Image 1: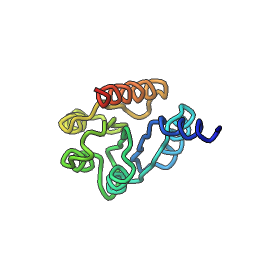
Image 2 (image 1 turned 60 degrees about the vertical axis):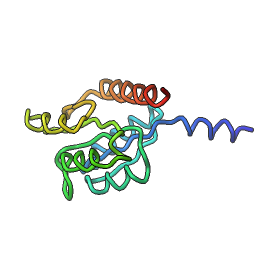
Image 3 (image 1 turned 90 degrees about the vertical axis):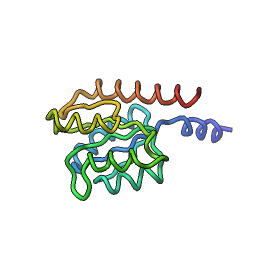
Image 4 (image 1 turned 30 degrees about the vertical axis):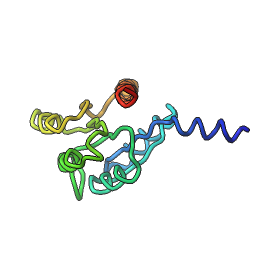
Length: 140
């Protein structure tokens, strides 16, 4: 009987994919978001991020810009061209805050752009709001 309630709870936990090559950042944000009852998936570069987005189907992607192998802008381009992945909302979380970076990311339809370092409360609010909007849109 208790197993039924446990699995039901897991099914409603939103899944967030963090794509960033900075292990300390990933570890810190993963810890904070797990405490907020999110399931966290991680990837160290854009190529791995695309693979995990395809296999894990997260509810949201937190994406850095500057990474090895495939940067955030290339990752956004691939996400936007894939009919099965382009509906996943993306929040850029990056130290690259030049107008060109923001404009390029915005052209791919990101939902928000947050500069590092950031306030965890603000990040959690943006994540919560984005996931709520996605769930409301999906249920209509």
